[in-house]
Image (tube, rainbow, N blue to C red):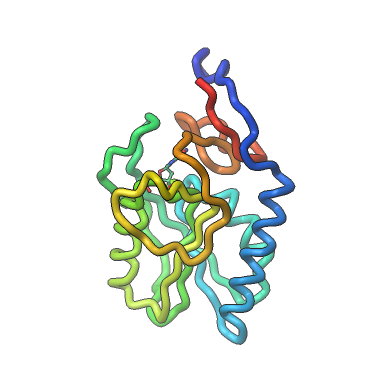
Length: 178
Ligand code: IMP
Ligand code: MG
């Protein structure tokens, strides 16, 4: 870890307790929407791995978990605007109730790309679930079916979100101050 990253000034934006409470509400909504059905969760790596593990343990309908990885950011704070799949699903999702699990929707470019890509695999249904959303940053509109928290246009870290690959292990969401 370089000095710049080690000395990052951060401030809590969403506490561990608030995240936990909100996830329970989101999971209850999903359990209710898919009553008597099963779901296939797609965790979008790396950012969504913490959220997805907490969310899936509150899901009570039969649930499969798949993983995809995409890159659009490089290592900086700005998106390159180009999405690349770096890890695809291992299984067939045809005829399944798919829910994409994301950490944050910023410009909407990643999710628009993913939604289109996953639709070509002919799922029975396709919904989007994101812990965070920055509505003022949208470049492409996207309907998010389950949103944890709407936040301002600030760069956030923790709870899976990184700053140059660090801070994903922070148990809460924080704002970078400098
Ligand atoms: P979008 O394509 O601009 O919507 O960006 C989505 C991806 O960018 C997210 O899945 C995150 O990985 C990353 N991202 C966007 N905003 C932030 C942030 O504030 N902190 C860390 N990562 C972010
Ligand atoms: Mg992400």
